[in-house]
Amino acid sequence: MSAPIRIETRRPNPIEPPRFDREHMDHVRSAQRKIEGILGHSTIPNRFAGVMLKNLTIDRLNHHAIESARQFAFRFPVDRSLCMYLWGSTGAGKSTLAWLCALAQIRNLWSSAIGGKVAVILEDLRKKDERITWLYRTADLLIADDLDLHRFSEWDEQLWFDLMTYRHDQQRGCVLVSNRDPDSTFESFRDNYQAAALLDRIDHSGPVVELAGSSRRATWGGW
Image 1 (cartoon, one colour):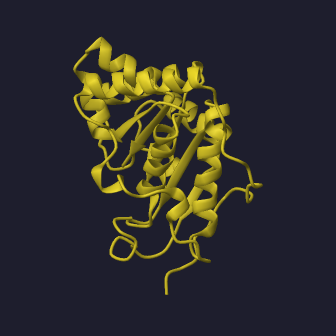
Image 2 (spheres, helix red, strand yellow; image 1 turned 180 degrees about the horizontal axis):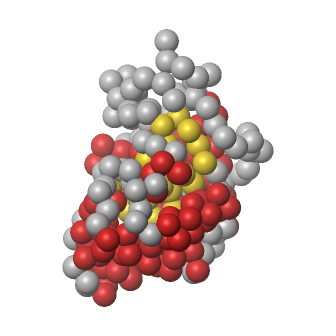
Image 3 (cartoon, helix red, strand yellow; image 1 turned 180 degrees about the vertical axis):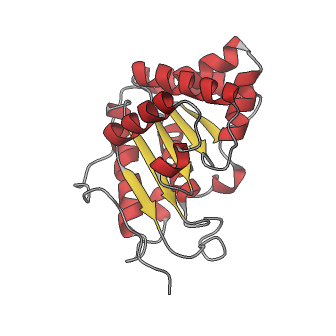
């Protein structure tokens, strides 16, 4: 049997989905169309298209993790400085929870969202296309997947630090996904100051959630 999922934050109190007026929703719709128009595709992986947070199976192994993601998705539209760090074993469901948080924003026209694997994000940033850089900097929510699997060059480290610093200063939130805890993920950074600054922002910007146990990909539809 899989080990129970552990969460490093207190269990959140129930919260109702946010409600916005038509002007706000039109603005979000326009921003999302611009993201998809400039990048030439939707940033949401196709395998998550038909999945919703509310439809995920709730049981004693995943209740806290799913509930934490749901609370983040509901709170984010009214506090866009929030960040969530998801980490744990391979196939535990980290990417699914991250992308479903983004889908909740887009489907309900709460917030604009952009993201991808960190390697792809950095590849886009290296193009030095001002339009693409602006999208990654200003989208309400950024999903950054496989953070620990990318081998950061010195240039990559600076690009990543600049992106996260800009978003932090502008109070733009993110969901970071890794197989390793925050300290281990950034221990390979050459610049200790940058690594410490990134870790400090993670510690003070939102929940750090660990998912443990064996892979759920075969039984949970791609988790």
